Every structure is written in structure tokens, then in C-alpha cells.
Length: 355
Image (cartoon, rainbow, N blue to C red; front, side, top):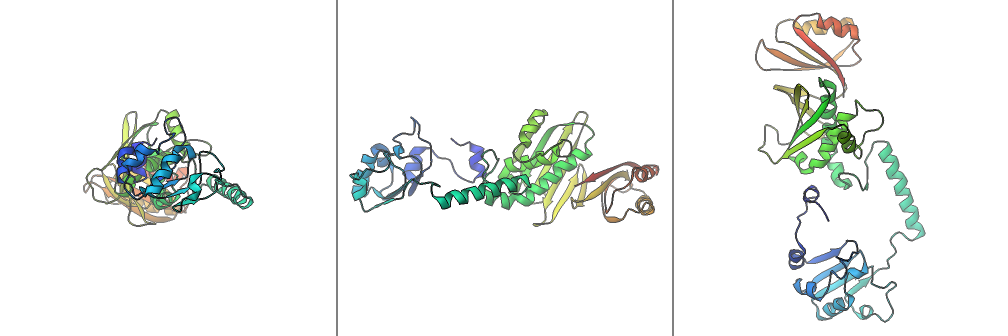
């Protein structure tokens, strides 16, 4: 009823029923009633349980053989039970369960009071508005992860993954048809969620309409985008790392990113260039040679155009070789300004991205 990867994402261990009955001190039922699960708790399965086990049924009454439950409660094999569902509802007045001191009953009301209905309605409206605003998407059945606590914990990594995906699209030299994702540390604990965030960032710059955590995988599939994922690999230079290689016909690009701490995201690698770039705002990405005068010329051209430089980060592989420079600017660089930069021979390429 639950996939192995989903269990890993929730940090739970999957076991078969025989092992569960033998190991558990408390057993709670939350499954649907089907021909396979009817009478799941019976004399035979109770015999497999620990002496003094506690049983809680919050699902359907017919999951339990009530006569066998009564016998186990009377002998102490089951130390106590808590039930809000019964085979016949309401529970008949003459049911033996009513006479047992080690049973707690609550009515099978769900949200069937005026106050509960009002609160549920308020929560539904609040959650729908939050999703439409791009805030937390809570309790969505088709969400890769519906646990709001984990979602909130992972939010800085999700925002970083979106930036990486967006940067890949804006720098790509063709239509991306494959992503190769490698996750280290905390991001590797939520593979599906990080992958969806990368897809959301990747698709948002090129698709009209709202791309979100629910429709991003479907949109990627429609565009023929394939994804591979790897986790549990030996640690690199950073304990927590998101590595994304985007491939298109005739080329590819690798981008790696990390969080130094909450609120301190960084792009730390682009292909073979080591970087230290905060992925936010408007950025000029410049390919050039590592020769004297390049940085000064770029600054002069941007200054003459009234474009203020907020920060500049560069990566190189060797002195005098190729350089990749990220220039964060406070306002858009006009096309003619970029054209003027390209007239300077050591500058090979200039791209303007927004993160």
C-alpha cells in the first residue's frame, strides 16, 4: 500500500504484518476495509502479538473480529483498546465490549459537529489560498510530500533547487531533454521533493501559466524530459549539496549548489568552474579570458550605461585561461550595453539571467 521510496521519504521502516505483530507495543489501524483486510485482527493474529499490547482502531470496525478482541481483552493478552469505529454502528447496548474496563470508546463523528464543519471549511479556504499564492501546499493528496513539518524544514533547499533549475534553463544552449540529479546530505533525504523543485524552476521560465509542485512532473513528462537521481554517494566538499546536470542535443551543463546556513544559498560550481555566487536578482553571466583589463572594461561599460554593479564573482581553472564571471546588477543591462561588452575581444559571451 506504500512504495519503498515513499517510506524512505517519511523516514519509516517497512515490515510485513507478521513482524509488525511480533514487534509492536502499540498497533494502530488506518487502512481501508477491503476483502483482504476484513477481520485483519483476529484470534490468529492476536496470538502473534506481544502480551500486553495496546490496540487502536481509527479506520473501519470490521477490520477487527470483535469476539476475538473481547476474549483477548479479558485475558490481558491485549492490555487495552481504543475504538471509534465498530462492526455495527452505533455499538449495540448489549455488546460485551461495553462491559470491559480496559476499552475506551469515542463516537465515530469525524467532523460532524457545527464547530468542526466551520473549522474544516476555514482550513480548506486557507489552504487553497496559500497554494494559489505560492505558499505552503498543505494536505494535497497529489503532492510529492504532504507533511507540512518536513516541507517547512526543506523549504530553503527547495528554494535553492528552484534557482538551480531556473539558471539551467536560462543558460541552456538548447531544449533540455534530460536532468541528472545527485544529492548529498539533507537534500538526499527528500529526493522526490527536491526533484520536483528543480523541475518547477526549470520549467517556469519557458512555460506560460502557473508551474507548481503538483503539475511540474506532469509538465516535464509532456515535454519528454527524463530524470535520473542518485543519492548516498560519498560526500564531496560540502555536507549538503544539490548537483544538477542538464543535457540537451549537443551539450550539457553542471550546476552545484549548497546552503552554508539557512538564508545563505550559494552556487558553488558551474561545470569545471568553482564559484561562490548568491543566486538572486539580475545577473550577467560572462564568458571571457583571464587577461588584464577585462574586469575594468566591463565595469566601465556598465557604469557608462548607468548600470550599478552590486557584486562580482568569478571562477577560473588556471591563470590566463577561460573565466566565468557572475556580475549582479541593480537594473537591467540594455541590449546595446551587452553588445558593447562583446566588442571587447577577450569577452566571448554575455547572458543576462534573473533569479
